[in-house]
Structure formats: structure tokens, C-alpha cells
Amino acid sequence: YDVIVVEGAIEMMPESLPAQLADGGRIVAVVGTRGLAAKATLYTRSGDSVSGRPAFNTHVRLLPAFAAPTGFVF
Image (cartoon, rainbow, N blue to C red; front, side):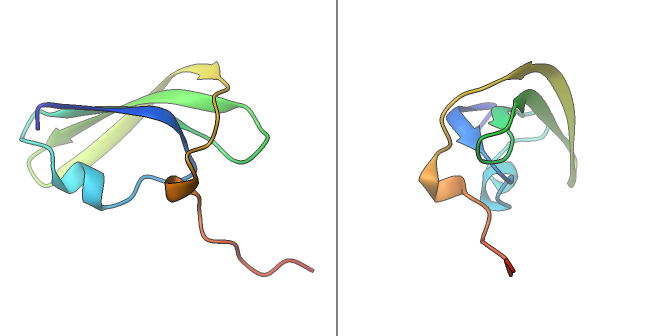
């Protein structure tokens, strides 16, 4: 794809999304953690690498399928 827009917040970028991008393709996603402010981020693919840069702070609902796995909590 040339552009992927994720319409909700994600806690982590899964490897499967950037793998679907064409060279020069972009992903727009809101990246953050549960209950905290998040950043609208633009990811760009160049060859085999993907880099991201934050654009602005925002808050949108987390997409459950993109939640980070829970680790040990004491």
C-alpha cells in the first residue's frame, strides 16, 4: 500500500503493518499507552527500514487488537 491510516490509538506498531507498505509508503497512527496522552505519528518506509516522527499530541480510544501484551505487574 502507499498509505495506511489507523483509525484509533495503538500501543505498539505491529510488524505486519509496515511490511505491507510499498517503498516510500506511509502509515499515519496515534501511538500511546492506556489512559495517557498519545502522539499522532507519521511512519515512512524507505527500502527495508521504517522511521517515524511524531506530529502532535492527541488522545483517541485504544484499538484492543493493537494493545501491547501485558507484562508482570506487582
